Length: 327
Image (cartoon, rainbow, N blue to C red):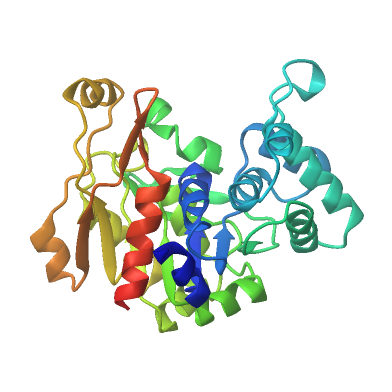
């Protein structure tokens, strides 16, 4: 079959991001190639990850755990176990997968080693790397000059202090990248940014010293998977070109070669629900994107589950693989 014969030539795909979007894509990609490297942000400071970060002084495990699970060849019981969240007591809300990674972090010398050994236990396809092992926090500067510290507060700042994000920074401008992550970027056949929150999942990776430069210098095509919907607090009223511009500005280089956008239809009733929450469909301003020298690829990528608009993992994986085959 196409799938098997393509796996033999296994394109090397590097996915850069964080949050649930990236794990959705990884889940689809592992059917097509075993050469997958996920480079994941570690600036998360909310929820169970934030609690472990505070308690144990470790890097936040949540996004990494999601990616490991997405790429794992585990039994359903193991998957259930790792995704399990405690319902009460002092562990309420904490996921067992996070605790598993925290224990690994206690056994081994570094977070990177902990992730590597957890990947071995789970028979993970490919590799998952934290973008840095430095303890970093995100800081957003709004257009009125206000600064908001912490990823968990940036996403919800519109509820307390509305305003567009002007730029995002790391509290440690000299954060060092993980060597293996840079190697994977230089060695890739395709580099995929996203899908995920623009300012809290994708761009933070590019702010780690040397990462944006590596992506820029790498020979592989750089694909930005554009969000289907805007995100209140981060990208209200953003068009697809606005997303690309923000990536390029923060990277200090024109990074994006190809923008992959959704052309699938979304029911008006679902769009109405999103509008009530201050979100809308990302407008695809094709001529502006082309003027930026970016190739635009439109595909039906959407999946609706529980009235939430998401990327469909298999449709997205196929679109990425098609880009690899086209070279």
